[in-house]
Every structure is written in structure tokens, then in C-alpha cells.
Image (cartoon, rainbow, N blue to C red; front, side, top):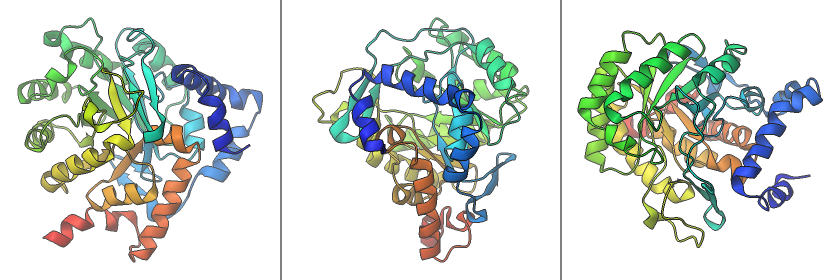
Length: 357
């Protein structure tokens, strides 16, 4: 059964129900069929030295990762690795468990190959996730812990939540991703300010044993985005992710568009591309740059790489293109590298910027 057939079945379900079915299926498959993940990995993991990089104190087999929000409770780490991803960002995890926002809170914009979500950091909490991840770590591929504050935590006490999470996951992840850019926790994006960023890193840097990455939203002008990313890097961030979901609803013409939640997928590709270029023009070569937002092909991923991205992340294209998406993108990048006469991805990273100098 090909993925288009499977998708036609899954798309008959409510999006969140479909996601839970996929999560449950992926998480238990190896128990039902022992050795299945090894078989899948042989078919999906692209192993080529040209794609490998050493970044953030660890090794990446390939540049294609899965963004935070897909595996909120770290239940799919093994199957996602088997499907060929080069890193997995689990979470967002909060100190205390929380149910998230009221349902329905996940919507398909099918004709635009996009998603709108208003999940609200629904997760089982730090204790449950740390116990689960701890059983697997060290893991086959790098794990990013996406950490955020609880909804009930006021902004003036937010740093305490991040301190708790860093302490909890210090020994069982390869990087931390600071999430102050989700639109689905009230007032969270207000923390995307220089003063908070400086205070946050002043408190976290002394206790964090793993690199910290700062993730921004696309809904700000380029100058502000560049400024707060520079502040984060100067304050101790070892990387920047551009970007989270968007609340610019003018980007979509879908009849299923809601007036709440964040957009991801093709509708934000152009804005994500533009914002990444703005940030990369200032920070390329000074920190690890990770591109996210509307990446659904090798060509799109490669364009971000040439614009300065060390790594790329996908989410929505997994839903619309299927479980072979990481393999397809990695194989496509290898072809594009050969066409440009690059021996490795490291030679391609930022080549567009270097050519302008």
C-alpha cells in the first residue's frame, strides 16, 4: 500500500486522532514485529560521508531532522531514527504535565499542504519524558530537548521553569531548544525580547551541560529577528532555529483556516526562507544555523543550506509526503551536491553568502 492510499485513509480521521494512531503504531511496531526498525533503517537511512557533519559537540549523519512538536512525548524516537532522520527534537516538554488547549486544536489546510495547530504544549511533563528518554540515551542520533514554560507559570517566573528542565535533561539530550516562540501559550512570545534573553542565558549557561539553541518566530520584522538572534548568540546560544509557526493568517486562503493557532507547511515557506536569509546574513559562520518552515523537498532544503543552514528540520511535509521524506531529501541533496561539484555538505553550507563576499 503506497503512502497516498494510506493518507487518504488517515485524512478521514480528525488530525489529532490520526496523529495518535501514527504515534501508537510507530511506537509499538518493533514490539509486535521484533527487528522491524532494523529492517526499516536499512531501507531509509542514507549513509554517505558527504552528508555528515560535526556540530554542537556531536555527530550528525545527515542534515535532516524532525522539528519539535511532532514527537511531543518522546515516544517515537526509535522509529524516527529508523526512518532516516539525522536528529530528533522532542517536546515541547514543560516541568509539569499539561493537557494543552481545548479541542479541536489541529487543522489540515489540505490544498495548501499546510497545518494549523493550537496545541498549547500538551505533554506528559518532565518526569515522564526524562524517564522515557533516559532509557534510550545515549541514542543513535542527536536528540534535542525542546523546553518551555508551563501555561500557569507567569512570565516573570518563566526562567525557573527553564532551569528545572535543563537540570532534568542535562544528562539525556545532546542540545536544548529554548521555546519562547510558540503562539499557543498566552503571552509566551512576549519573552522574545533582549532583556529576557540576556537574563535567561545568564541563568542557564552556568548549569547547562549541553549546547543551547534559541528558536524564533517568523512574525516579526527582519531587523528585530536579527537583533534578538544576535543577543542570544552573544549571551551564550550555540545555535539558532529559524523558525517556529506563524500567526500571519493572510498567508492562507484555505476554507479550513481558523483565527487561532500557528501555521506550518508550504504557506510559510516564503517567509521562512526570507527570514532565514536575513538572520544568516548576520550570523553565518558565528553560530550553528538551523532552517525550518515549509521545507518539503531536497531542492528547498538545499536552498536553505546554501543560504547558510547547517541543518534543516521538517514537520508538516512528513504528514503530506509520508515516512520516506527524510530519505528522499537526503538522496536529493547528494545529487545536488554532485551537480555543484561539492565533495561534502560542509562545502555547500553558506556558499551563496560566500559568493556575495
